[in-house]
Amino acid sequence: MNHPQDKQSTQIQSLATHYQESYEQVSSLAQQTDLSEVLYFASLAQSKKGSSSKPLRILDLGCAEGELSLELARRGHQVVGVDISEKQLNKLANKAEKESLSIQTIQWDIDQESIPAQLQINPLGSAQPDQKTLALSELQSNALIGSFDLIYFMDIIEHLQNPLAALGRLRSLLRPQGRVLIQTPNAMAIQRLLWYLARPRKHVDYHKPQLLQDLHLSHYDYLSLEKLANFAGLRSRRHYPTRLEIPYLLQAKLSSPSLKPSLVPFNGLKTRWRLLSNLLIKALAKRFPWFADSLLIEFEVCQPIDIPGQIAFWESQQPL
Image (cartoon, rainbow, N blue to C red):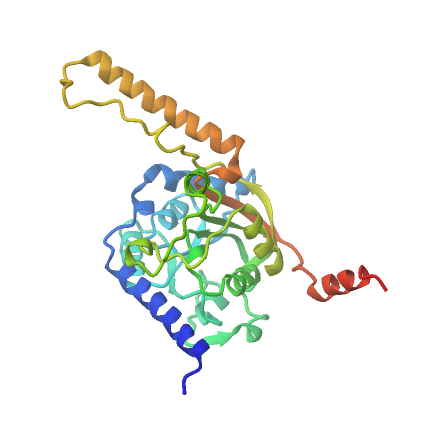
């Protein structure tokens, strides 16, 4: 007789497998084609580099076809691109070869309980690891544990079955002064708040396939992401503004089928409105980052939450 938890685990694994298969079939991801976003993310590494001329060692985890990895390598950083998709990694490797850029690619699913042996040696060195994977507890003395200055973890955490364990693995790969940049859709985005206000008692059934297109297993606002990171031994250091769009207000379209293209004043008004709305979207995200469409937060290494100490504290608060 199968245990219900075994069945649920199998279903979750099936979901993850389906996501990977769908991901393999994608020709190009939206995040990879938005050049302005790629350049912005790469500039965040430059700001961490500061006045030092030494290149950063960067892990681009979930690199896909690698536009960010390529841009970081062009800027002189030492880059390792990691992804679950061999097809996407091959795209990155081909692009890097054409530009004579040195980027190591490693296939790895961070939801697994082990770290690839390729991540345990200097990826720019001459040593060539075999293809086996080693348990995390066996890897503490290897070269890449605690060697990355910066890890990009963009739009990945919401897909994970065990995000706490994944963040713990990321932490083990960081230098003591290293940073990890996490981006994820914001569960407190203004669109979602407006949805709750408009439908205060509505229930949603995610068994309907049209509602589960993103295959996100979890959603985070700032507080829930901070708490999760603290348990893993990470804490937020700073946040970066993204976008805060107010539906129907900032996306209003000044257009009409009866208007002809020759109406230059109208076209100029529409252009000015788009510029103004984009400025307003960015200004709102800067002023109210925890209501933005997505969270982009830089975390640093700290001690994990002391769970026994927490329990002892609360037990000491109980009346005798």
